[in-house]
Every structure is written in C-alpha cells, then in structure tokens.
Image 1 (cartoon, rainbow, N blue to C red):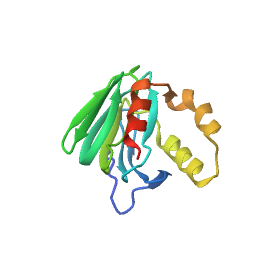
Image 2: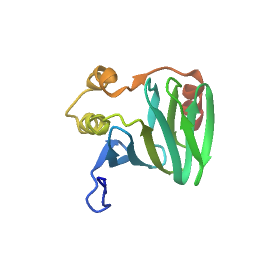
Image 3: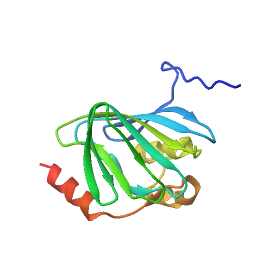
Length: 157
C-alpha cells in the first residue's frame, strides 16, 4: 500500500485571491483535499457545480456561508456539509468572520492545477477567461444564483 503523506512544513500553499489561501494536501483518483483559509471579507468561491464529484466541507474555525442549491447556510467550527454532483454551491466567510475549512472531493479530480491556475490569475499571470476555458478539464462549471448574489450584497458594508 502506498502512503500519501503531506507534511505541513512542505505543503504547497497558493494565494488564489485577496484574503484567501489554499493549502494542497492530496490529489489522487480517489480523493482531492485541501484546506482553505479566508480572511474577513474574502470573496470565497463563486457559484459553481461539479458534474462528477461530491464536494465536502468541514469548518475547522470561524464561520462559513455556503450556498447549496438555492439556500444559504452558515456553518460554524465543527460543522460538516456534503454537496452532491450537479448541485450549485458557493462559499465565503460569513460577514464579520474569518473561516478555515477542510475541503475534499470524491472521486478525486486532479484539481491541484486548477488551484495553481487561480493563483496565476491572482498574480496577474493568467486571465479569468483561462479559468472559464478550464471548466471541462477541472469539472468546475460556473452558474448564477439570486440567493447568493443577495447574500453577498447584504453582507457588504
């Protein structure tokens, strides 16, 4: 049996947006996992869905707003949520809070290069169009949600 150990001291970390840090943990055919840390006011992940994978979230600190379908839920430290394939979702720290989250996908999706692409966009080395063009490759399909748009507007000062 092959063991996949990621040491905290050497894990790859990517600043994918202002106030957002993704730390890459494992990316196999069975499982993709990372941690995401959001500063207060960080944009988080826009509305999207996956056609092949279930995504799961375990909030380890702070408070996280999560859109699931057309409902926004606020998760606190210790809360766990799964989102099945085909269901629209988005997430960001709740207004006035930071959030730290363990995020996973099953089956794994080879997503580390997607996170690296987000980092390149954040650093100015790639475009938002590059992200849109990668939708089929990384099974990350963007969508719209009035419930999420309303939540984001009401949370801003």
